[in-house]
Amino acid sequence: MASEDQHSAGSGDGAFRQYLPDLSIPRFTTMQKQDAHEYAKAFKETGVPPWLHGLYLHWRKLYQEPFKGITNDGHVRPGLFRLQDEGIPIEAILSAAETLLSKLTPDQQATLSYHIDSPEWRTWSNPEFLLSDKGLRLDELGPETRAAALGLLEATLSPEGYAKALAAMRINGFLGQLVGAPRVMNESSYNLVLFGAPSTASPWGFSFYGHHLCLNVFLYRTQAVISPWFTGAEPNLIDSGPHAGTRILQREEALGLRLMQSLPPPLQARAQVYKLLRDPAMPEGRWNHDDQRHLCGAYRDNRVVPYEGVLVSDMAEDQRALVRAILAEYLLYLPARARELRLAEAERWFGETYFCWIGGFGDDDAFYYRIQSPVIIVEFDHHSGVFLTNKEPARFHIHTLLRTPNGGDYGMALRPLIPGMEQGYVWKGEKE
Image 1 (cartoon, rainbow, N blue to C red):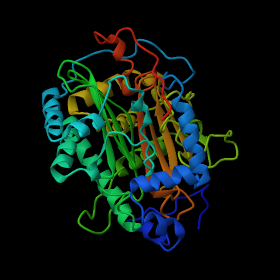
Image 2: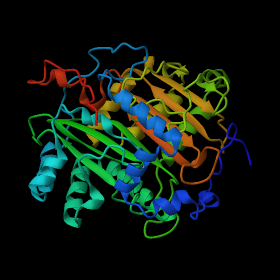
Image 3: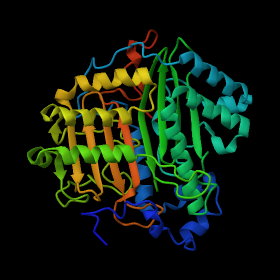
């Protein structure tokens, strides 16, 4: 078998099945007896696995930092974002939120709702561990209420974005079945948290998060910020059962590889910042067990991410078209008009937009890439197994994410522009 430094562990349909785990080992026999709360409690009390528990403790420290935003050099650039009409269907979104609230008991409403300025916005995470249990968990709701919660998601996202989110949830349920632990991982093992009071005139939003799908949505009138978000899949294909044929993240993969392969050799050399996925030349901390090559994952709200690679403005027009296609795919969660505006804004910054690559770029190689500018960051990474047993990054285990740098995440850069929110505040986490 090829090493992690060279090739993926397999890319064909059904390739993941050769890496199905032994469900008789204690990890799975224990997990199969637990619900999500018992599973999380045992993790926090025992600290097993230690590397993930250590990462969790590090996340808690990062949460104590006042929010600043991801930057390329430690300094937030002001004036990059503005209030605008993006055609967001706020009336329909409000109606969906009111429908959900009408189906909740007073206690459920209180559990769901947080202040618009709550630092709990920042406590989303993408592992299957329920590390921050806030809001309502969909698999603990009745069918009507759960449908209403999904109705809020459907009203907010584009039709294609909602289909992608639903596919990620179904794949999570498929993984739960593969490892015999559907109470921990299922189609509805996601938390919904409401921030602020739903309105057509005042700011509010929500967080929807769980294993391999985390969406943070800030809404103000007809404008939306869906950032940060994380979407992943292990495997990224359902090959049996009622949802057989469901697949996600293949376009992000194919477009990224096509872009890298299309660059002339001098630009390829500049774009490829590390030749190996775990390169000895990487500085300490550049790779970790959970995020692997990702830099902008959960709790990394203030990370300094220097520009690397090649400028998009140095590329030929057909290559810039591929960059636009990649960004359009990453902006898919936004309704069409908002997506158009955000894509045009990203293109305006192509003179300061960098594309970088880690790993090989043959047809079967596993890889990482990032596109980064003052107004958007997207990352793509092939991962080694977490539940599956592949030790090398595989084309069937994918993590993707989007961030809005320079304070744009969670709509933070827009808040001082909104009447009544001008004064600002220090957004700092409290101890749980």
